Amino acid sequence: MFADVSYRTGALVKHNLILRLRDPGQLISYMVTPMVLMLLLKPLYTKAVSDTRSGGVVQAVTGQMVMFSVFSMAIVGNSIFIEREWRTWDRLRASRAGRGELLIGKSLPVYAVLVLQQIVLIYYGCLVVGMPAPKSAGLLVLGVAVWGFTLMAMGSALATVVRSRGDLMMASDVGSIAVSALGGALLPVALMPGWARDIAPISPGYWGLRMIQAAVYGQTGQTLRAALICVAIGLVTGAIAAYRLARGWGRSRLA
Amino acid sequence: MLQAIDLTKRYDDVQALNGFSLEASAGEIVGLVGHNGAGKTTFVEMVSGLLKPDSGQILVDGRTPVKARDRIGVSPQHIALYRSITVREHLRLYGKLAGLRAAALRSHIDDLAAELRLTPFLDRPAGLLSGGQQRRAQAATALIHSPGLLLLDEPTAGADPETRQALLEAVKRRAGEGAAVVYTTHYLNELSELQATIAVAAQGRIVARGTSAELLEGLPGEVLVGAADGDLRVTTTDVTSTLLELLGTVRGPIESIELRTPNLDDLYRSLAVSDVR
Image 1 (cartoon, each protein chain N blue to C red):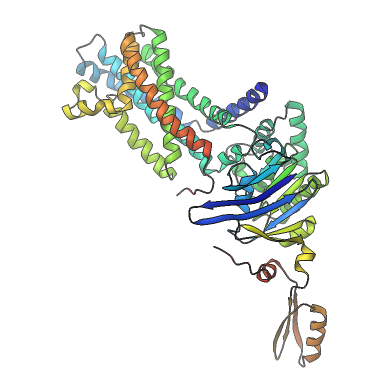
Image 2 (image 1 turned 90 degrees about the vertical axis):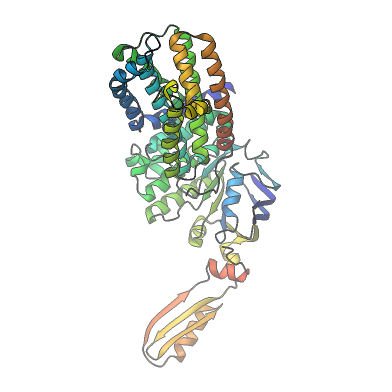
């Protein structure tokens, strides 16, 4: 029984990995662009954020990393949306694979992509941009793992509720800019206008950035607190996505 | 093999199934026909385990559809293929999901590709296949694990003659090997070729069942004689005698003769079945 489940789940993971590898454009774009922006924005942030040890460079690296990882929700959304558009999800649901197997098979490759993106950008930030090495590798791993989960859940939920590819693109673009900018990824929260500072905590990006920055500085308490909030956001949005995916779309039509 | 008893299903204000009952035994091909909206696809989705009936019961080999998925092969009405994935990768995926292991899977893929004339396209992404090739590839995903119950929802819709022929032969072969087949279509001639028993669905239930000959027996056809002094059109149950009579009445030169045997539309009319859409 367990061997059969593992076999089918493995087949689904491999299948979804192939799908991701055949469409690498978005991932490349969301890795290369922040790399360039980190270098360009580093002098600006170094001048703007002078009150902390190496705050400028940490802001340049983690801000861009969080911003473009939020953009990567589009990769998650796209991976689910094509199943609706190509009517393949219901075909899979009619196979012997159970709901859990389908969800794991769909999620794991996308989650791996999100984690890979963050790890590459942090390495790049340390090696090329000059960010100091994170004080605790464990906290950073936790932060990256939790943030990847949150993004995956949010992106999945988004893809299950939109009515068209245009809606998905619009929601990902506008949502990503809003979530990351309001969260302090573009402009440090301390430099934002008062009204924006007040509402910043409603943005998942705010908690994602706080978690990653606290992890870089080795601040266990702050990392865990932000991680808890990110996990909560991920659980709520993930539950919405899982419910919708388990039911499929049946006769519903895309716009 | 398949027993569906008194199924009902309602979508908002539409009663999609309303006491729908159908059985298919091993080796039998059941041609499910009916106008759009008659409940055919809803029924197929229920037997696939994608939809739950509001009431009624479906048993496949004595089990619920979800528990019997290893015995069911489905080819949906719409093409459901990944555009960037090759035919071989599709077959590998659905074969593995059905539990086939490496050696058996390879041999099934090769045999099936040859049977459905897909061998030259095995390593081509589905998005680059023609419509007919996609239809065959989709049917192959349903056949890969040699299911005991085949659900084919309009498998030849828009297909070219080569595709139609390949699919019909494959379906006949599976039925010959003991599979029960539910085959929805709008083409009566396909069901005659498959020697299928026909079930006519209308307004969410089966309103007639029998062979093509039984169902069409006694229904009127049409005789049309085009002559220089005007066309003669007669609806009749005895086409031959009527034609001879008409030929005797025509005085000028005859330009054309057209005989139309009864078809699905005549059957629907005789059953007072109307298109609900």
